Amino acid sequence: MKLNQHFLAHDVAGQTVIVPTAGAEFHGLIQGNKTLSAIAECLKNDVTEDEIVDTLCTRFDGDREDIAADVHEAIVRLRKIGAIDE
Image (cartoon, rainbow, N blue to C red; front, top):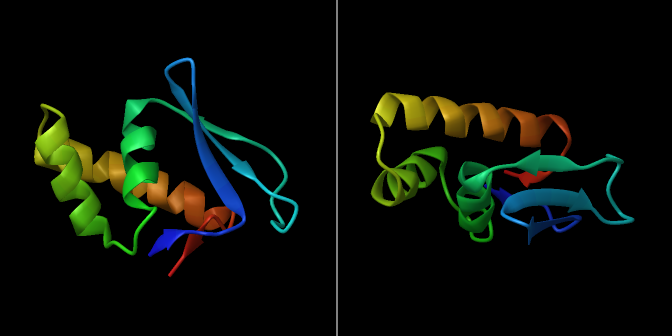
């Protein structure tokens, strides 16, 4: 999976904002913290959910289960708005 070409991730004042371009059906913004920023960075390339979890586990201190749950929740939200290509 990777970030759909009709969505762009930007870091603004320490927060990540994912915005749709004109070609997206979704109209709005997704805001997030450093976790979403790391996920968006991973989604620049074709990656699996487990690979994203692995990457975040190396970057952040925390329980793998908690990180995996956060990644899954973010992926579900991004899928709902069409921001992820499978």
